[in-house]
Image 1 (cartoon, rainbow over the protein chains, first blue to last red):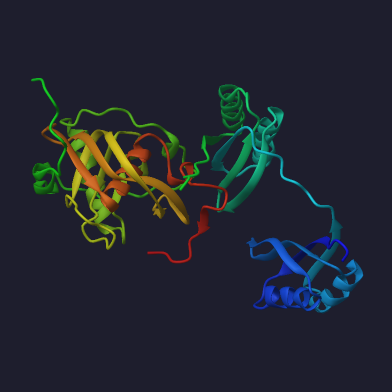
Image 2 (cartoon, rainbow over the protein chains, first blue to last red; image 1 turned 120 degrees about the vertical axis):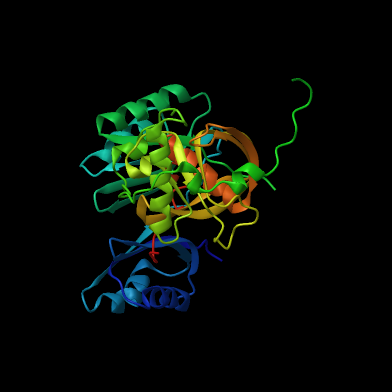
Length: 175
Length: 192
């Protein structure tokens, strides 16, 4: 038996009831196994990304999902992706909140400081509500990272942007 | 005085307190919202006996009373960066023990334990709720407005959560600064 192929599928566009049911129904019909997936509404737009595996060609998945796109309100992409192995976490995990008045460059200004010290963002969401801009990110830093320097760099960048930033350890309760 | 400190208990003095003690009429003030910078400003220590502190205490209670579902309000939320807040969780379904309505000045956490995660909202962050882990058992020390009496008392469950939320406001933090992760913030679906 051949190794199953991994595919990354995205579905983006106008929200309506039934998009997930139709998408996953078509994938199941091709014998594909749904692995990780995430779906949310981004300013009211449907946005779903998933990784599935199976023994079919990418073109077969595209044609199975094509009916979703016929009214022109949804975009579907299908792409073969390699297996990824998550690196062993030797460092520490953090949660960062940034909030303040909306202006261009808040996300890039703050997360570039995380990147500069080798931090890797593992989860991020941002929201704009009225004049409030809000970012919450989780990131890992390698063992030995100068955390005081990281916190200072983030706070300095946030202050320059006129927003506030708080950093705290990502807590996991072992049971 | 020496020896082992007495374990903190609920405070009869605090439970008996009402805003009538303040002797001034509270005014209903406008509640400010993020991103107003006052909400990120740590509060100054106050003189609990000063007339402006007594008036602020009365204003906080009056504003809380007219705000549907409001169980606590800090000075920052009415635009004043000061360490004063009011609480009244007596009508909330998640409340176990409670002290009714009270106002504290310069309050601080003495002990905390038994963290629990729950979803919080805030009048100053009207469009979101967030999952925040907080202690469900708390010992708090603070001063009563007007007399300046110091009270140290224990609180639990929802009153403990509310106290920590208000203490955060007084330190210049909102619940957004405490949420558990990137997917712990949720658009609010119902407004009180």
